[in-house]
Length: 401
Image (cartoon, rainbow, N blue to C red; front, side, top):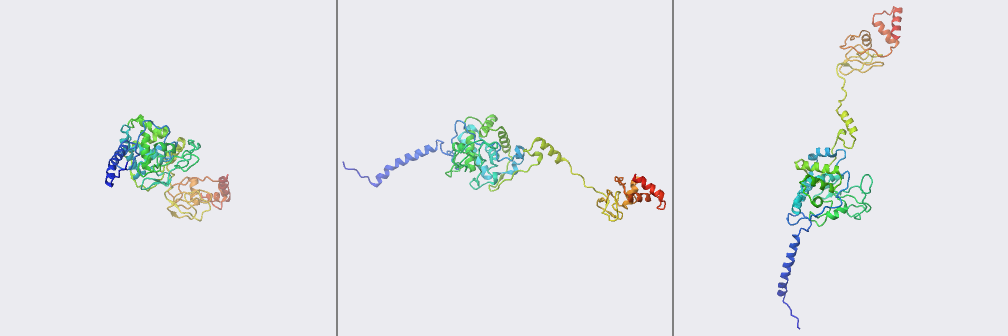
């Protein structure tokens, strides 16, 4: 039988129904909810949320990198407004809330919960000097400690040949939301529609965290379901306490926006608030920080004199002059206050308990053992004549006894 040859127009006409069929099939796929989340506003482009919760935790750090151990939860809450949330991170958190509301309305995922996990895990992508670039990717990249079982870490042998965490021996948590590689493979999505599921990108990571939190039954507006969901993310009660406290603060408006290209420094804390210290050490620091320093001596005095052999009175040497600075001790004794004649004034004061001539206040009594010269001078000052040798010697002997 002779084959029939179709004209060009006949061939074109035959292809039209096929094109319509393929187009309809593509639309049907797009509406099934199987597509990954993207950065577009297409309401049909939403992630799939598993009906059962994930078995593996998302993060396994006992001490998440985003929290300064000195500040702890209390110090972190006190600096939420000043610390700021990078613009790209805040946008990603709110985008996650929008997508999950479409994917699983019953979950009621709030953006502030995703933001609280981002703050605890990596300080919104700024841990270790990182910053978010224009596309929301942590640069140069966030990698947790090697999960080798030491220093309180979990032991997880390599599961990704170092593709995500750059470690071919053990796994490391990666990115702003600190997913371990095994969990990322199960939950990671391409939320910014760049063709890559990148745990270092805050858009991909935030939406993936939302999927993890919403997987399985639960309404996150219910406190019990909320806590159970956070504990699945990281199985630590202290972790859940911190995340929920920060989430509540963010929900009340306790946050500010900051540029993407800024790194963040750790909050400064006093020793009395240093959560890395014991309670006993913090209590001792409270005493140190609240005890006023010793007062600086003030009042009338003399500048250092140069003519005294010994000083113990209210002056400062036998030729000291009135001045405005506290007196300086002379050799062998303590300087006093006020302007005096130095040695003589001190010795007169010691005997009589009265101010020496030219002073306003008595100097303290002599507390030293007198030298022969001091004793002789004191006896002469008290009226014993230098010609009265017996009386002078008796006086000196009595003083030196």
